[in-house]
Amino acid sequence: MRSNRRRIVGWSLAGAISLLLTGCLATLTPANLDEFFDPAAAERFPDRNPVIVIPGFLGSRLVDEDSGKVVWGEVGGDYAAPDTPEGARIIALSMRDDVPSPNVQPAGVLDRIRFRQVSLRLRPYFKILRALSAAGYRDEDLSQRLGENFDGQHLNSFQFDYDWRLDNAANAQRLHAFIREKTSYCQKQRQLHGKPEQAIRFDVIAHSMGGLLTRYYLRYGPQPLPVDGSLPDLTWEGARYIARVILVSPPNGGSAKAAINMIEGVRHGPGFPFYDALLNGTFPSGYQLFPRARHGAYVDAKDPSHDAGSLLDPEIWERHGWGLAARDKDSMLQWLLPDIPEAKTRRRIALDYQRRMLRLADQFQRALDLPASPPAGTDLFLLAGTSMPTPAVLAIDPDTGDIQTIVRNSGDGSVLRSSALLNEEFSALPAERNPSIAFKAAVFIPRKHSRMSLDPVFADRVVYWLLEAKRP
Image 1 (cartoon, rainbow, N blue to C red):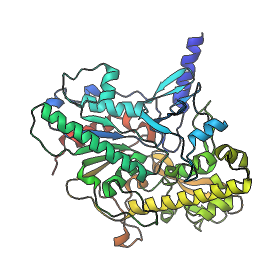
Image 2 (cartoon, helix red, strand yellow):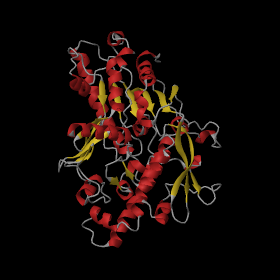
Image 3 (cartoon, one colour):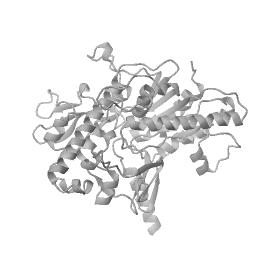
């Protein structure tokens, strides 16, 4: 009876959990990918580019190296619980330059999450890797789990895990180091297999926020965002190492769902703890997912014909008491700032940090929106959702700060089709300020944000663009 109950709990959780901002879980069982691809693909394309899979927000497991507690990827047991002082301090990033954040490190792309005694497989990322395997790519982690033997063939599929709480520009620096490391590996493997030396370039499959990280890296390489608020030099340094990018449900124009969760907080699913907006407010990446005000994403609830300004304006957050500006959550600030005895000082630190993160998000978005096309030899492809009602316009009550969705448009439930495409060709912006993205090809699939990779069309397009579509 207990095992049956456990299975029922697992099924209900797998169907009900909706992950913060982008989502990562799904239970839909797709067709067998091996039936779609030629088993001789590896022989037909022996000199393919190695591929890197980059997950989105919440897509990497996080572990505190000092305490051993799981920060993300497990609920129950010895994990960092957000409703406890110790857990909150581990989950949150430090709000002070003179105090380091907890030693939290990524521990692999998240393909399963453990809920108390039930381990739930997250099919989306697993199926991306499985599709690549069926097409002849060799991924170390996946091959070990499936017991596959590649008969001495070197690896050519890699997973980039990262701390998704951090500023995306900072994670671009880590991606650069990762690419340099894998470049060295691939060059050594070519030598070992008697192949001529050649420049190594990667193809990338980037999901959701991972697409924003990738686009920043293409443009600016490992450059951080300048501390003076200016933009980094547009060098296309990252494009030297990347030939093709497949962006999967990227919030290029932002996600209203992301803004709602940052303002209201979020519970990831039934039985999961609540992640307070104040806690999430320490994550720089969360602000970087906000929709652009120029798209009419925010209106006055009392008069929807009037814009409500930009959610990257610190004054709006302080006026409405959102996130770290909340006036009734000093007890949680005490958790995060235990060595600061005065409530007034704690609030000053929190407000200053929030202002800096909002300014950083604005700077990051301006860096991505700078009109520019990648150099020849680097192509962008898009796979995005359509036909699903997706939050598009948020109404903000100017008196109470209450926020609600009043318009939904076509998308994947989290990211609008128009946000993924970011086609502003017909907007009122002058040509020199048009940030439209020149995709080589775009395919829209009527699936939810977290289930895109479970559609056979997804696997078919990915493999075609990686292996068969003509390259320059």
